[in-house]
Length: 347
Image 1 (cartoon, rainbow, N blue to C red):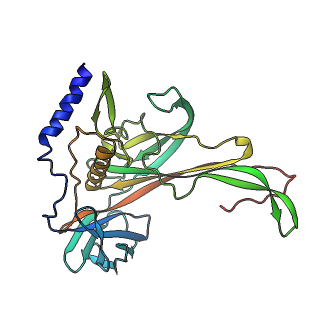
Image 2: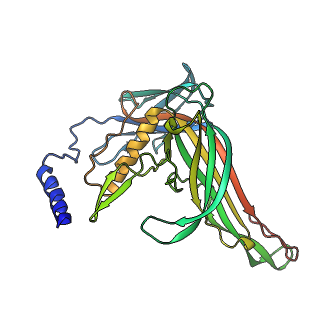
Image 3: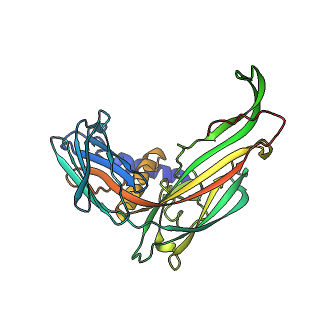
């Protein structure tokens, strides 16, 4: 009975305010210039996305003029292509003050950010574990638990903000037969069965439920008689902050599911952890963006639509530049046999 009461209450709340919600843009607000770019010091080519707000969707802007400055000196300029993308070539470093200016002939927008100092990766330990795949299932799986020790930059003051991204390459090696035109005969070959490739980027595809910093604002599920109340959102962008650091150091606890098959056939699993040091503005922006997506896709009807912050003057969107620390972990076991002709796949 209590469950039915809650459902009726929710329905009444939305029926009572549907005249005032105003979710549909009636076009009364003037179109604004949108500038979006999340750059890093690891890249020399920086992609800037330029568009204008619209009633149903953003409209890409062609031939907008874009200028990038570092510490007050212009270092690169260009124009946006037919897809609203502009690529600028510039080398950026931690501590730089970086500014962007965009002019599409109607409006001019700009933003400035200071690149934070990167973390230092002190070391990494791994542990092979077996755990349940989810809280509501008894199915278990094999995982590698990465315990990554990181340290704040010397002289760091106040709370620091970070984003964790995992890039992964994984495949199984297996035997097969194929025709070799040079030898004019059938030979056994070694093939690679790709599971993830190098372009697979997975913020949120690892598990962080045992890590206090990564799970600080993640979605909590508190069920009472079948009613679920949500506090926070999934940490889709792998965000965390230095509030949990002890004497400037912290150990990230990240579980990555084991995806390779029979070790006797050979396998490759390379995990590259990139820890971006970001500004508080970028941290707030990404949390709001995750909240916005999950509010609608997960159907969290009781949540207020989040307001996504912007640091673009004269428009909207976000411009950020991060520095990064990188940890690369390789788990590779190739097939070793002398009685066949080895023809390895390109890597």
